[in-house]
Length: 225
Length: 304
Image (tube, rainbow over all chains, first blue to last red; front, side):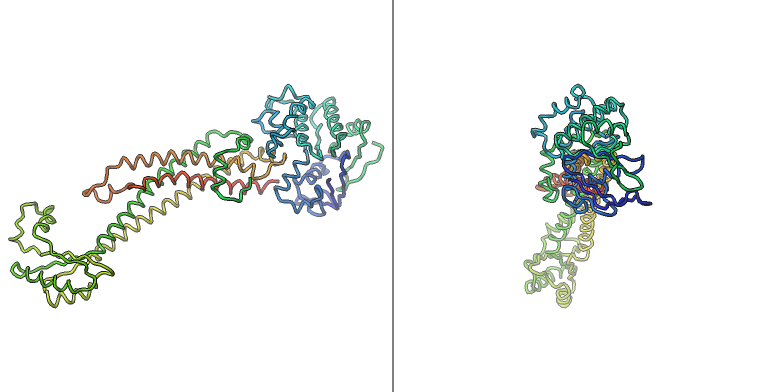
């Protein structure tokens, strides 16, 4: 699905990530952890073509990311659902419109997926908020709406960057259950988080691998977590 | 929709409209009205520039055509020799290459020509008024230098005036005026392009977050650009249509052309030319379309 090979990334000055090799196999569940500023977000951005590696190769669905034009990147993003920590919506559209935005922009509004919108909203528990505007949502509601938006296209991969960053424990448990359910439906999931208790709580339900970024490199964390 | 094809096809698609693409960009307020206003004002000016160009063109053509094909010979001689010299000049003209017809004006015609200056009661036969011979040319026209030589040998009182002397600067002035008119239209078009580019760039910058969200969920550049292109094209079209309509009305309300008014009252449209201003809003919309598309592409290329 997504493959990084000896990837390095530097922001102007020093190197943030170096010699990263990573392979997200279909149906796998990964956590990405590490201290703040270690490069978790950067690594995720490399995984959906928002950043290009300064060295090495990134292959998205078997295509070298450097060979993709802007429309190809757009096509990749229809197969990769992304949930940001500070998730952004179109504030002038209702929650249900925002959730179905990926269908709208890809011209699939009338697809069967569009009919499942109600089902999807009830799955994330936002049925009553369907007509609300995004600024009216609470933090947890925003995150769940983001998950709904990320999966409405039935993507192959779901990437989540600190999805539980600004919501309480109970809500983050709920959110995590949604992501675990997605994984059980066969989606590849990668969650960046620094919340180790969240990782521990998840490991009871799903076989998750934990990757840790330390000293610019990535390593498989031990089973002690 | 691919943006590579014909502009017309895109304009049609724009008018048909992708309401959904339009909806993803938040509605804009006051600045949108400015685009409409400027487009209207520019179209209004363009109507006058167009009228000026067409009027100057007509003027240059008229002076060029009517006067290029004619010349005048004045017979300045004492009254008793005038008739003889006139006949001699006419004989010479009969054998001159390039002359279609030559005809001496009658006393009545000359009186009519002088009436505006001396009144209708002038007794021409008592005055040494020169006799005028009207020469209508054909083909490449006459050779004025050769004709003058022959006339000076045989008709001492004859003076050839081939009109070129005073016609050339007038035609040149009219041509210049026409050129200035067209140049104004080009400048107006460029100003519309600049205005739309500024407005579109501002709108794109103001909606940077919207664009980022759209890119994140997999929108292609064309889809995002479409929403902006549609807005600015339709706004410019609407503004320019109103401006053109007002401009045409203003031109129509100008006093109508007459012989005494001369050039100034000739400013306006004639016949089928009244349909030409319809092109102005279409051109303005085309310019807005191209300008917005270029601005959108430039902005989008800078994003991930």
